[in-house]
Length: 224
Ligand code: PGA
Image 1 (cartoon, protein in one colour):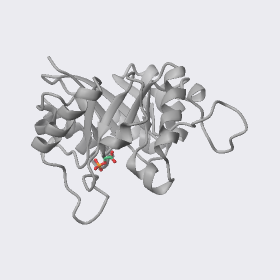
Image 2 (image 1 turned 90 degrees about the vertical axis):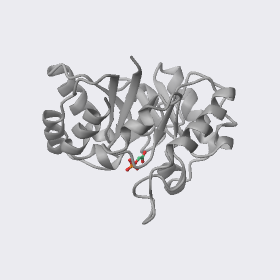
Image 3 (image 1 turned 60 degrees about the horizontal axis):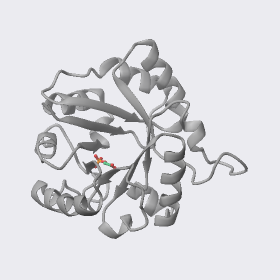
Image 4 (image 1 turned 120 degrees about the vertical axis):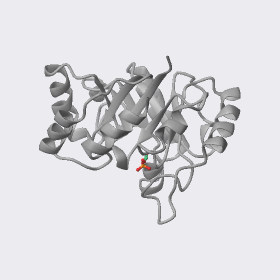
């Protein structure tokens, strides 16, 4: 049985009530895969969701969408890995929206990975080109390959990348980086299976289709 990671990246969406409704409605479906479902809510919801998961023994894990490249201290507006550790197991690092909108560099991403690992959290590093990995020497990471133009909100022509080219690209990465690699970009219930079936893909990152409980439940159903 393949163990697959399914990440729900909520981006800058949802209030407390909306998050609770989502948790009430999304059910983990029995699939032929062993699914680990990780929710990446905004920072403001980590505590609420973490308590709700514990109280109701829900089979979800939690992740943060970003982390400070510094330790705790005088960095207004930043959230450190030590603070995240109180609620989450995973940290998303270097998402293309952060690289583009907040000018995150490979150097910053490397620092974030180090802070995350120092706290015993799992960094999931998003990238679209091989050279973005050049500064990463640590192999205790998970990679998320998100090809340009594949993210559903990236433009009018956005579409999921061809699974065969994803597979070939990821095979090349495995030579340098013997780590788990996920695919992200326009994953929906209709196409999830094609990506999870790829031998060298260990899971998927779902953005838009993770927001509505019904569409995300369908994504999980079709993962089998
Ligand atoms: P999408 O987002 O599923 O809406 O394409 C994926 C992502 O931003 O990681």
